[in-house]
Length: 102
Image (cartoon, rainbow, N blue to C red):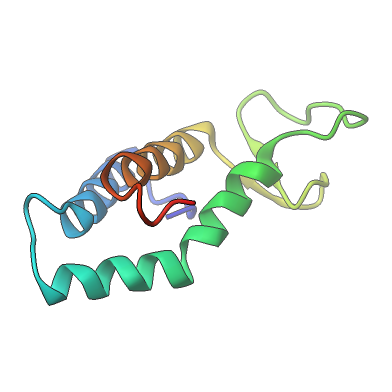
């Protein structure tokens, strides 16, 4: 989700994830397995992407069009559009799965 495939692809990918994890469109064991896999294997990484994109207090901004993952200028740059999609997915998770977000 953090790889730059182009804006349209990210929007489609985000929508697919929402559909797969939406408790209103899917029900039963399949949805539960998908949600379990997402929370166990991918949620921490997405939170780390957001957290590491924030500049440290002593660091200066490297570019207005990207964020640096890893907290240094040699790290992997993440576009703001990608960070926005990650934030939207995390917000979706908070709204739809409050029992999982603790």
